Length: 235
Image (tube, rainbow, N blue to C red; front, top):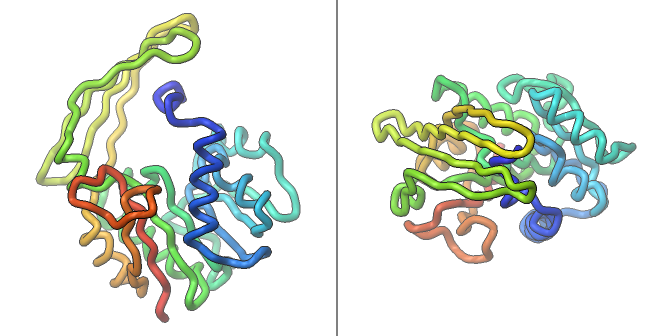
């Protein structure tokens, strides 16, 4: 998690959840799925706002962190694969949230389309999908091949990135060294344009109604490195 220390801050989480509450415009008690929920940064705050929240993630380690934040009648966590959500969830949710570049990490692009179809299946008619992640157009416009920073405990983190324009896959190699030791890992994520995501949504019966410049309350721009899409289930 050292890679994300510069952005994993409670004050940032609260700002993002406030924006979610604004764009969702749902009453207290509305059913919300955070998928994948990771360490529960958004899920527990949404439950505090009065929503009935389910969080699903594949990682036992991240779910343990999420549960340590607290659970209750309005907040539940489930371990599972976002490509095959529980059958009992069909038509259950008023909103599904896919946040913080939590999409595009499967090897096969067909699995990404499958995830969108699963999101559509568990939404009630008229329910909304809120998708947040990197915008391929904006990321490529200001592509940074190398980056480094120092964490609060003095650990130095460095990243090297490469992008394959044919597959759309961004590969990020991270290395760190500090008081707690050293290590390295590599992960890959497939970047999408807003138009391609809108096509995937439409194929699943979801119509993209709004496209924002990340968490900002302004329209998506060609230079936006992040995007927030709002899609509604029309059938």
